[in-house]
Length: 267
Image (cartoon, rainbow, N blue to C red; front, side):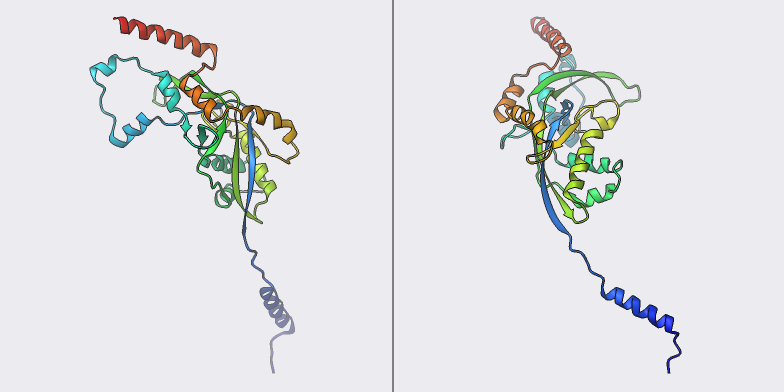
């Protein structure tokens, strides 16, 4: 005859029943396409091919002739600052990994989702995110990263208006399409893309609004999308080959540079 208390028997039976009723939920991939409409201008700042070569083989000392050359070549730096391709709808693109990073950082300020969840549960399958918009040549004064914060001049491609479409895969049911939309919109508000972006604190560039066909805010941005996407492959190539200046300061500096080039050629 069993001496096990009745209450203990009931507890064991309940645990067995609960164990037998455990169900493992299958995770599934879902996909959403969203459109980004620039809310603030976009700065490119890709590493130049010369800098990559120096990293690969080491940068040697400049020759006497090189030291006599004008320090900066704005046209070359402008063209080197972008990510560019020769296929598809646009000449310019941006690495989609930056979108995932922006969403993961935005998750820190978003209730209900953790940064690590974004890193594990969101995938961007495309290797290139096409960027529409006309690139302008812009020269800015910057501070170098040395101990003295030495001032220098930097030339970059600058898009006054821009837009893009991004494909995002995510894991359901842990995340929903609404979660992805909200994370991306928060990233567009507090993080941004490109150089001098909102995330860094000093600038406010690269911010964007999220929309898409069929969404409630699409009518607010449809005309912007149509206008900006006219600046595609051909228009961007022309703008890179024959750059226009982004502002009066850049135009003034380029005028001074042209005079100095002519003076040295005549010397």
